[in-house]
Image 1 (cartoon, rainbow, N blue to C red):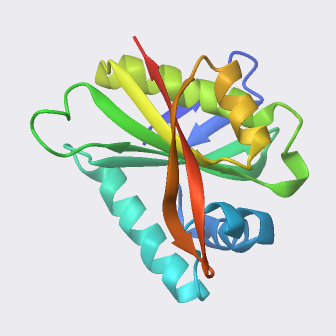
Image 2: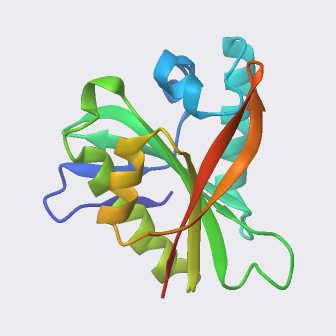
Length: 177
């Protein structure tokens, strides 16, 4: 099992367990998070199936994705993931990431610290040259967090997603080494 710790060890990224099911379900179905993602779980069975796939994938030698739970001061407060691109040309140098932080912990810098741990891990572990992510144009907090971590806005993907009867624009951010 991979565990990534901050220097103070107050913040830990660890692989999820089945006991994290309720946390993941609640995080991904919270109203603000639902606005940000294309889909959220319709029920806890869907979340369980997804979690089981993450647990299984984390055990594989040649992973296409890694999923982590964020523990802060002993409490689970979010999750982050790293998706490695699977085609042969790209997989050796780039990946994408995602994140969801508990509503109670947003705006306190904890998400930034957790993402910094993941970014450092990803570049070192996979020897990446590029790490990318998307965020909604209206998600100012997420955009600020990415910019603090050295991600650069590469462009606005206009009308990139269709959700709840309207088109949404996305910002594409990347950090390169």
